[in-house]
Every structure is written in structure tokens, then in C-alpha cells.
Amino acid sequence: MVLPAPFRNQLGIDTGGALTASMEGERVVLTAKPQKKFKGRIIKDPITGLPALTFGPNAPKLTSERVAELLADFP
Image (cartoon, rainbow, N blue to C red; front, side):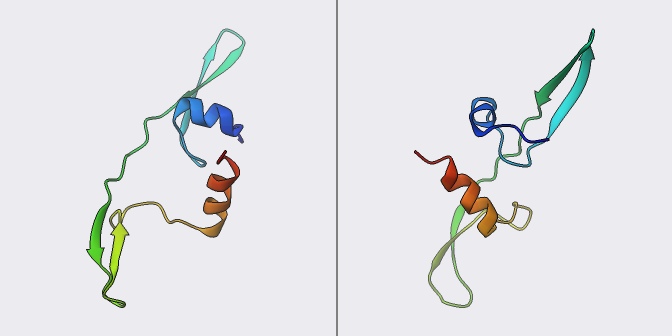
């Protein structure tokens, strides 16, 4: 299911964020599940030796598609 960016922004969820569905009478109600926040830290890149930002091994992958989605919502 695709939610428009303004809805996602208001709910505080990212693309691919989880929703729960429930029934209220004849309505389907979608509720945003809280998203895990990843705390970043600066490390020394083992290949270049330069400082790099990491969010840990379980953080979602940042793909070129995701960057394009984020930039599309940027004012």
C-alpha cells in the first residue's frame, strides 16, 4: 500500500514503514507502528581511514532509490 508523502510525514513513518489494520464497523483503520530509531555515531572507515557515519549493522540500507524518495519530499 502506498501512502502519500504528506501522510507519512504527519505520521512520522518512512517509506516501507509498518502499519496495522483494524476494522471499525465498515471502515478499515490503518495505524502507524512505532519505528525503531537508530542512533548514529562517527567511526573511522576501515578502508579509507576517513571519518564515517554509521547506524550499526541492523540499520536499514540506504539505497539510491531511498535517497531519491527522500529528496522528492525535500522542499
